[in-house]
Amino acid sequence: MKINAIILAAGRGTRMKSNLPKVIHKILDKPMIMHVIDNLRQAEVNNIISVVGYQAELVKAVVKEESRFVLQNEQLGTGHAIMMCSEILKDKDGITIVICGDTPLISSSTIKELIDYHIRNDNHATILTGELEDTLSYGKIIRDNDNNVVKIVEFKDAKEEYQNIKEFNTGTYIFNNKLLFNLIDMLDNNNSQKEYYLTDIIEIMANQKYKVDGCILKDLKETIGINDRATLAYAQRVLSSRINRRLMDNGITIIDPRTTYIGPDVCIEIDTIIKPNTHIYGNTKIGEKCIIGPNVELNNSIVLNDTEITNAHIDDCTIKSHVKVGPYARLRQNCIIEDDVKIGNFVEMKKTIFGNRSKSAHLSYLGDAIIGEDVNIGCGTITVNYDGKRKHQTVIEDNVFIGCNANLIAPIKIESDAIIAAGTTITNDVPKESLAIGRVRQEIKEDFGNKFK
Image (cartoon, rainbow, N blue to C red):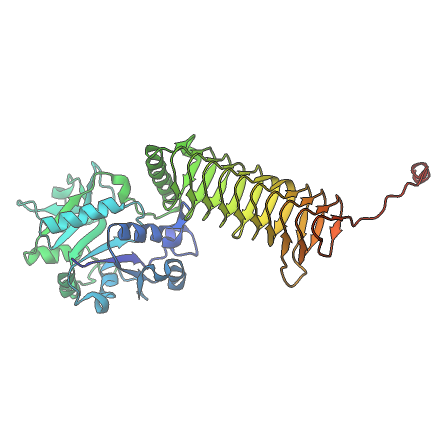
């Protein structure tokens, strides 16, 4: 069966107090609308349409090719948003999910369950519902004597006979697609807000004897819609707890889940230990028996087995096996760190390949460099890669020893087994097995100290 989805993502979200569209605010470093899209795709929903409005181009830039887009220039209600999709969907077979772009906690398993429930019961429309003793501001689900849903009544409009109803509308629906678009023009805006409400389509369907039902959700945390910064923070705690629990159940040790934030696309292998105050985001993959943390931020990177990273910030890098990084190291922009490497405190690398068993123990900057095997980088070494207009490359071959406080003025090549004396500035290539010294000869001026005073 063809399964479509419409994501309602046109609003600004005024309670966020932000100039950004609400749906691109991030949870675990990922825009909330992308959580919704990923959950739909994991539920095998492939034809996704996002209804955009406020700062539509920003939303499109975030979502990219993951969705088609329909523009709702005027935000005239949820029903009006569906009307905007008519040209694309009105003639399509199958079913259509309607979901809000600010509900990132509705899991793929819940979406699958909702689809299965809709199909199994041969419904024309199915509402994802929940049950609460106090339904607060949620719309109440009204059923007839045969337990069919006949309408949704907003809390403020609920009559006394409806006050004790516990079942409420979460704002997520499945419809028979052609039926939805056959009836959508029957909506009107005869209300105080002058808007077209999708909830009204339920009563229209029921009056025409179509089968409408509600699928009750067990975990009510999934129903949370993000309307303000406090709810955004709460949703992050809920999602983080869900992810951390799944990882721990799969053989990963997380010392303090309360201070560990791991994105939904991260993969971690068994017997790895995650220490406190660690943030791991993007498409990061971590192998077995690693130790990550404390105080590590790791983004879109690959870490192989038996590697230890402490107090470090790493972006878009590959770190192989038996490597030690940190404390206080920074690696960025596609560094490749080979096996058995040591990168110590206050070392920064950018666009650098660092060969097997090489080490940079402390206080160095290595940018735009290719560094071979068994190389020693002394304290204070800098690859001087920028001439004010362009970046240049430094090549250091195998078994080179770089003494402390060396400046390597790129472009430059240091051939294998060479030695660079401490305090040297290198401006020309260094041949293999040679010693390069480039510094002022020391002079002693006796009794100068007394004269200076």
